[in-house]
Image (cartoon, rainbow, N blue to C red):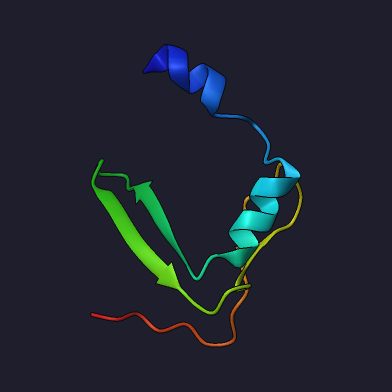
Length: 70
């Protein structure tokens, strides 16, 4: 996997990937906290709620109201 990952994971998003993310209606976000616990969330909205600011920036979430569904 390490060999494949070095070829497949880039430090930037090509233009077609930026356009793809902007069409999504949801994204899966994950992180690891200070206790090494893994957290995963599905964040949804209308198509266009995500925006790739630059080829190397993280994705900005654009929304007026954010609700956590339990």
